[in-house]
Amino acid sequence: MAAFLRVLALAFLAVLAGSGVGGQKKKEMVLSEKVNQLMEWASKRSVIRLNGDKFRRLIKAPPRNYSVIVMFTALQPHRQCVVCKQADEEYQILANSWRYSSAFTNRIFFAMVDFDEGSDVFQMLNMNSAPTFINFPPKGKPKKGDTYELQVRGFAAEQLARWVADRTDVNIRVIRPPNYAGPLMLGLLLAVIGGLVYLRRSNLDFLYNKTGWAFAALVSKLCCNHFVSSFLLRIPLPTFLITWPILCMHLL
Image 1: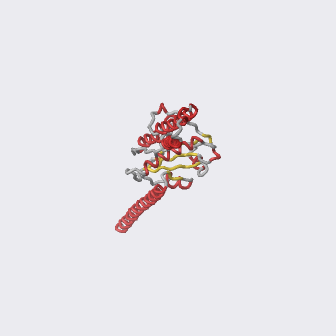
Image 2: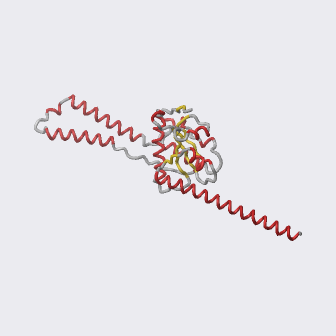
Image 3: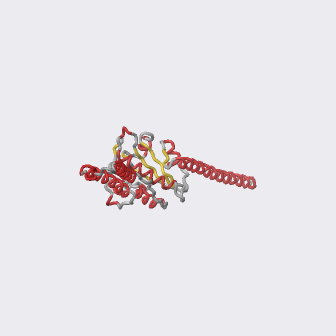
């Protein structure tokens, strides 16, 4: 009888060990599927769009060994959230900088939840304003520091990158797309002036026309102002110099 009980106990332990190994393999398989899915989406779009189902499955439900930065926003025109659009532009710059970086890995992903596509997520998180940025760490729930202080730090891509580095230890070098509008406008103006001089080279009295020069000076000033403002936006400004209006739109 004692021998039978020992055999039974050993069999029971073997079953438990087998189920533990099987559970671990299943967990690893689920994690691999989630990472592969996110990598596939990230290869097509820097910022992954999530609805309620995708949010719960890929972010809320374990297992997870990656961080996800999520922008909660309201980009539909009828919402009239101007700040949401401005923040989205900066967020896209940050996400593109990471996606096309040589350091790109599956440690961190950038995603967004639009209110009109995932209002249930807003209700789940008791969130009634946008835009909001939250870091969802690999383990556990987001802490206080995982919610970005938008009204304090602004939403420039450089400021977001510093916050991401602080929360995830992933450093992202922000690369802004070049803006050629200012130089092109200035070049067009010079070309027009050069063409007029060439066409009227036999009579250059128009060069003494004050109205013409005043108009040219005005256009040049506008071009220069546009170029300078575009250049300054590429400089990572300290927090106290950011003067963008930070407004949160009430949603619910």
